[in-house]
Image (cartoon, rainbow, N blue to C red; front, side, top):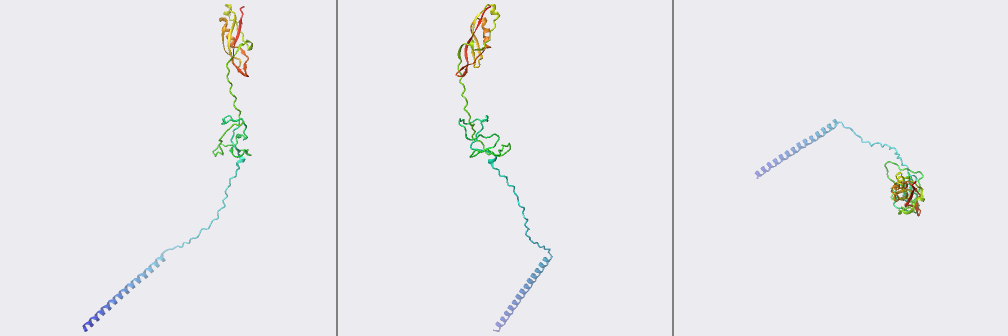
Length: 256
């Protein structure tokens, strides 16, 4: 029994020593931790004091009043005062360089496009108060003509139908100038004489186109044909239209 009591008192002493050791250990660690914390704070404070800190103040910029912008307003141009307006673009009859698409005998109630004035298509026919001439620079076309007609263009006159030459018989009396042939010396030496009939074709103006001898002495035919070709006749008309005429010219050669 006493042995047990002695053993229990020994265990109680060990436990007490262990508890004291643990407390001392914790106390030492606590002191060391506290000392480290204080040293860190002091070092940090000293480091902050040594730094050159600048205080930067953020100041809002002072608003600068903007100058009033004066925009130049473009001058409003009334198109109707500078250009002509037409319901339909119709060229003037003097524009011979334009070929009409249609030809009408009825006069158009739309005035023709004026020369040298810009014209646009509209709902009415108005002449500009201050006409604007077309320029030669680059720009937009107000309107392009889609139809060009010639107002009051008369129909072309029908081409005359050529008529066949008519027969005029003996044409000596219709001559404005009838050339007399000379008497050839060779025919005079041979005592050649008599009539020479020359067949001629006269054009619409009365000039001899062709001539050839149809009868007569051979020595006299050349002189008669030459005289016939240089003769001039009155133009012959049929229904008011000049025509060609076939006929004969008779020359009399009398031997002396």
